[in-house]
Image (cartoon, rainbow, N blue to C red; front, side):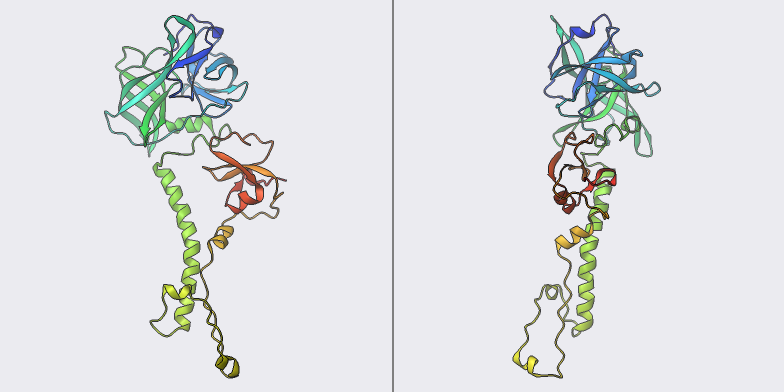
Length: 349
């Protein structure tokens, strides 16, 4: 365990140290005087270890924005996980997770909070390098992670971080193995995903790092889009091949404009007028064909919040309106035209 005793919740009022490098990391202080680490996964929710709370129903969360109270939303004693709901929303960046593959001996960072020497009101966000040892894997889903070396008191609930393409991504959450320990244990992404659930934060587990599942999803979407264009193009080819002399159909013919009628064509009543070739559908037509079909498209002028990674938009007054990390406001009609779909398939009126 990393929880440290003998301190009061109101003693800590700010974070220093590596707080700007890991802005989603927060300190957690309980009524019993213990402190530990948490991870901001949305504007309202913090993920941490259950053993830090000691069965408390509330805690104080210390972030770069100051202190705020939080209530325990749910716990899982077997996974040693807990979810806290903040008393007021946070505007700090949220954590990004990855399910990347690592080799044994790869360097990782464990991040957590510690008391600041000589400053009883401060908690320092600190980091220590640990080595990836192995993982408990079930068909590609990481259940837990073993690391070489121990972290420090206060690190429980903090992230295990890996650098990928210049970004620091969370690989797991520390739950055991203090100073002097030969190994540490961390919760893997699969149980975190199952515990958090998309009802609390639908975008936390959208992969931002290009893992296999994300690549498969993008491949399927790309294939579907290309299939729409390809079908229209092939239809044009077949038509041209059947109506043109053998060997004359080509890609250039697909974009050939309709031939103008000559005076001889117009004056010859028995001569059949050439038919215009069928053209491949334009990008705009193909995009519109991929839009979700709703009997009621809602109010086209209402401003919605589009969550860019998931292509889902949210209506004013709903939980995720304007709160997801990567998004933008736009009119509902524009959001639908760009291929976004309404949350829970309910358009905004």
